[in-house]
Length: 407
Image (cartoon, rainbow, N blue to C red; front, side):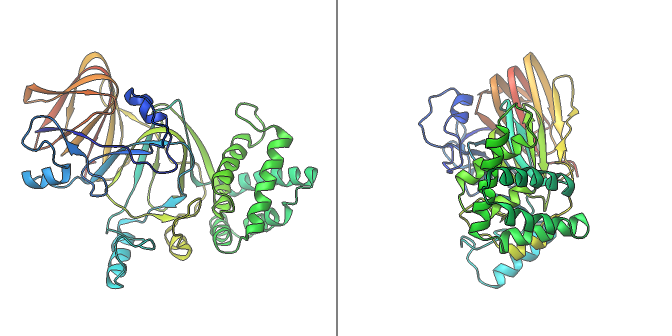
């Protein structure tokens, strides 16, 4: 069973006005277009198109009418023009306990201060579609962050910008104890004790460092890219304590086709670029700054993974001559990227799936019904369910196949 699906972009303020329109080949409206959701998530379910009896229904309603199970994942196009909020997601066990606790406390599920809106975890992967995709993810090794603080402190001293006390307080916390405990203490200070003056001093230090080293893309100045990203965040979120959290995080620049994974507890904040994102079906988000939304510091510190290390980059594995698979070992989802140049790719299915086209023109058919194909162009998607054993994908272009992971 194939159901063509579509959706409208979500106009979050951090969205890019240009990246999604350029992908799908239409003019920009000038308004931010942040995400397009492909799936049955009730927050923004896709709508079924085509000639089936389900045409016009939202995908969740169509699946319910057909007796099909809900999808365990949500697939998205994500286009960031500025920083998303810094956030982390709970484990499955933490989500179950938190959801039960807030249900017992009678907190409405749509309340602004509700943390656990369901009882599921929310691991997620993103694959870059733009030439560069920038993200802050995970906590940088302490020694490297102290080097960055030294760069900022020298710039402050040279410019008399007055950023020293805040930088010194953070550096002292990072110098005390083992790395994980030091980072946990630094996060607590940043989100609970840093003052507006501290944030202003950090912003001044970033400006001084940019001025002194002419920190811009490609100059090779020490931490030049990090300074540029942090200055952009400071401009978008003036006075936000999360700027100190961002200072502690790894900056990752993905090239097209490269991917990163955000497992439970890992802080992350996408900064700019276009990507395909796949996640477990959940709304559980604990924020850590760069946002006007609710930040619950004690609960974030309870679930956050404060271990330092490199960003969790995903190395794809070959999945045939024309495909690679981004398998992160979770049962909720696995993602395959298929590139075709006039050929055909046969995909076995682990369960219900969604195919999203991101370039060119392709045809998708069930392997046991090759004559009933759905045509896809960039931005188009199709749901495959009903126990289909596999898919035949043909044409010239690129598609992403989302389906449940191997159990």
